[in-house]
Image (cartoon, rainbow, N blue to C red; front, side):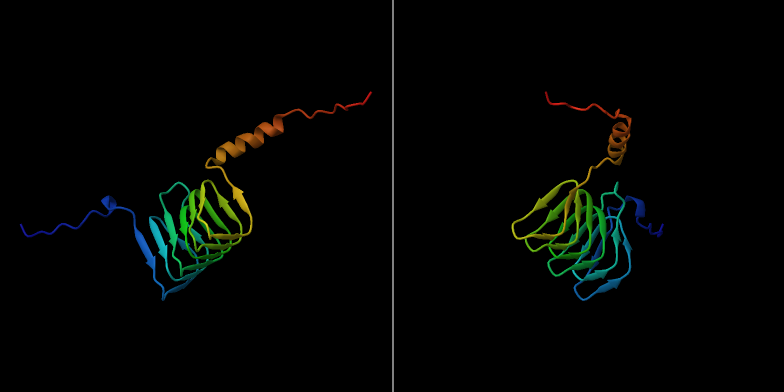
Amino acid sequence: MFKKSLPDKTSTGPAHTLISRSTEIVGDIHFSGELIIEGRVKGNIYAEDDSEALIRIAEKGAVEVEVCVPSAIVNGLVQGDLRSTNHLELAAKAVVVGSVYYNLIEMVMGSEVNGNLMHISTSQNENKRLAAEKKKLPFNNSVIQNS
């Protein structure tokens, strides 16, 4: 009669994590859901490519080393490679010092990338298939002669 039921943790939405302005984390972060960084992270940040994970790096937020996530919105500093397999948005005050690997990218006027921009495919299987087909192509040894 007075039994209180606990909420079912499996039915709740995605987890949200905030790293506040006064926080510095040293070490790798593996997350799902949404990660909001207003402070500083010195370490790699990972989320599964097939997840709905999203990282938001605020204007005063900073990340050193590597970020590998499906979706990202950056308005702060990333010192290291940034890899987004789904969607990447670089806001007006975003600064990336390193290579950016993206599938779909939006860059607002004022954002900076000091490194390479490399497009990646959402399907790794497609890349493997293209590489296998390339190996199957016959090598053409013909020589063109001018008359």
